[in-house]
Length: 64
Image 1: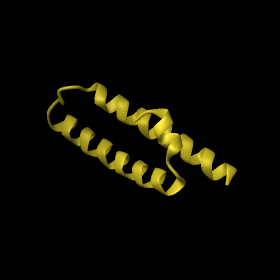
Image 2: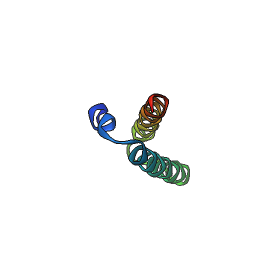
Image 3: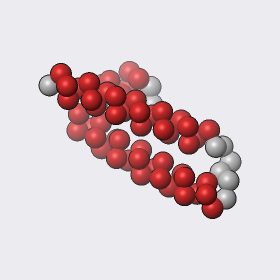
Image 4: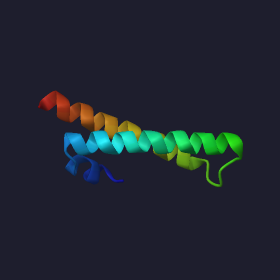
């Protein structure tokens, strides 16, 4: 998800997307603990996406 797409979302959509990404990250971590996933960089990408979503959500709630 690109930064432009993230900025286009409203606060409620950001909260929903953030919750979904956190759940996906948890599942990825669990799958990686059982057996190594094919592309471990997906963990890092997921964490960065969560950080971007959280940053944009904070900016929108601060300005509102």
